[in-house]
Image 1 (cartoon, rainbow, N blue to C red):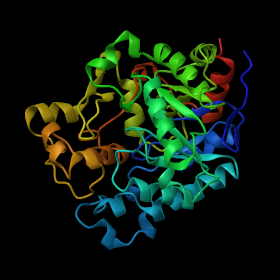
Image 2 (cartoon, one colour):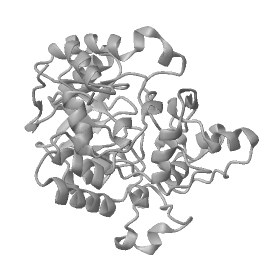
Image 3 (tube, one colour):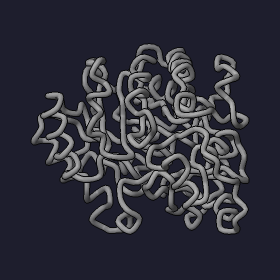
Image 4 (cartoon, rainbow, N blue to C red):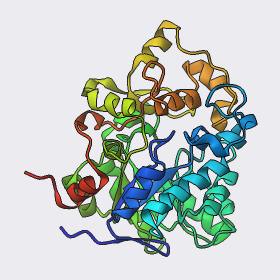
Length: 369
């Protein structure tokens, strides 16, 4: 099968492969910039930019409270840091399309969308909730393409009706994500295991629903791993695919070496769904952190960053036993004992570190025999 370029709004992605937005610090300047350079769509995660390692441009007062932990959402989602990340990515990919992934559940969503547009994002991708107000957040940036993430055809229908009514606008593309993805899911815990909710079953109805709203491309995500998977998704009606976990196994991935090794070492039975302060089930590697939570020896929850609205300033974090901002930041800093390591269900299949260029070649043309 010959893959066609992917058109999202006014932007053309040469290879119809989107790199999933992974935070904190897994997909920032090096990874996203290189993916776009190699013809895919690089996606910068807007989560936790205030813990960016090059902190020289952040004022000391913005780091009050804990080492490397920004105080309040205005600093956890730092505009200065996000702008710097985009600038660095642009040095790699030039004027090729670059996207930002911004969680709908995060605090100050509207502000961070505007920040990303100002920083140079061509495309905004939003999941972790149904982004009914996304067009309002981006209304001053008509050239920026908007791509929501949904899990059902019904969700897309509701979203399109709302966008059309409130802003006379429709998504420039839609990502349909099945429950094998890493991080937060669009289904309740029990629903993640039902056959009818698997990607190959939810994709065709979303493709049909999208046809009711024009020529919106549909992108398949959640469990897509190799060339054969991509072909299968295209045969089911997808115009492109999104992959996250496979990009963790690249030289250019911004994640710590500790995180990369943690996933390479993981066995299939080590990858679990667990509760999250965000209110959705999350998938990752069961690690030392989860053992400490069960033993009651995990780091104390003390919200200073106010990172996600559903957590209610640490109330939900106390219930599940960990602060997601702190633990994802630990993973970024390479602290194995207390880090939270998100991965898709296929993470156990990761067994080597290769370049983005080689990965893109394999995804487009198949694995070398």
